[in-house]
Length: 266
Ligand code: SF4
Picture (spheres, rainbow, N blue to C red):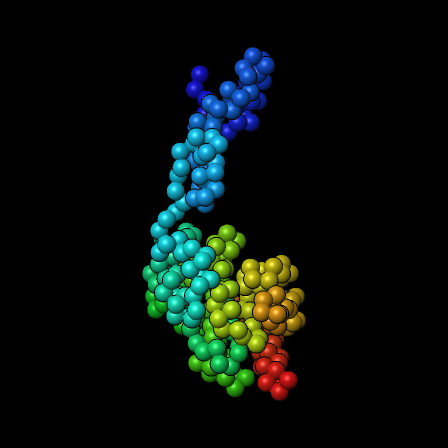
């Protein structure tokens, strides 16, 4: 009889056959371990395990371009360094489907950072965030509070386009999040505006629907606490182009701009 699969189902099967007590458990476990995929872990940890078990060492993903190591991300001293270090990333399934990597762009000078969900078709083609219809609306939203695109920084939760513009999954977003967090550390924004539910959920862990939470100040626990104003995503505004929705977004942006202006005098 060939033993494959995890230990517990085999233990149950052997138990059902009434032979569990006839085979010493360590033998069953050894036979099952033979069929298990080798764990991937840090080299030093692997060596420690190998010393004790004699299992062969399987190296961790070693390609630092496709799997940028956390030390490289943490060591990036500028946004340009960071982009160079991660633009070949294939660490989640979205990487394989992208045309262009969309790092984010703009200026940190105003202290205002906008965070959206992920690149869409136009962004994927051009390698820039918010360049389609939603981007045009974002430009208008900025103009309404007296700002131009070049004065703010714009980024997304994920840097590669999800297929069919679907929402990034939790694991995809969390895999990409260290890059955005390093961007935030380097930009040190005074105010963040999140666009839609995804950045709020993935960056701040807020699960409440965007309709209920928009317009209410949140706080990102980084750099001593950064105020976050959640508002609707421009793509949602385009779909729900009502006066009520537009007015809500405008008032959220006015509040963010006021905080920014007041921060300059504090
Ligand atoms: S979405 Fe982020 S984690 Fe996934 S492949 Fe692109 S850069 Fe890497």
